[in-house]
Image (cartoon, rainbow, N blue to C red; front, side, top):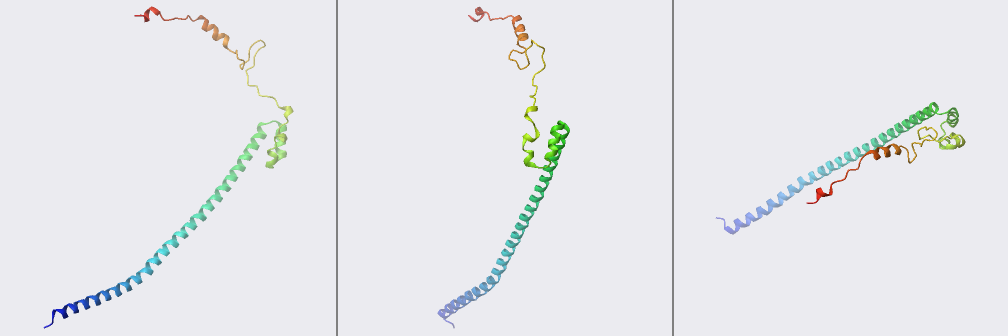
Length: 164
């Protein structure tokens, strides 16, 4: 029969050989999977990067479109303001506006549009008859209020009522 020592030695040799063979097989399988994992990660990152580039390009296309629309609206607003100024102002101011055209620098020059010698300050008070105070006067309307207050009797509390 086989001795116990030989049996244990054979088992140990088989165990070591099996572990070594298992390690070799595992390494071969893992070595094949690592490039696949790296390749899939690389492909995912490359797709994400391409999507990001497309998003950035789309952002700039949209920004450019919005800027052009804003410029068009600004041009329409300027045209509306000029048309309104031509229709609502005097002939002298209208001629000055037409002479300026689309020159923005000249449009900022108020001297070209308005002659200070022809300016009339706005009337922010009501017309009055001679001898009356104007609406902006400090005493406007106070006489009527004083007469109403003079007719009201002042009533005071009875001091005996509060003493107990």
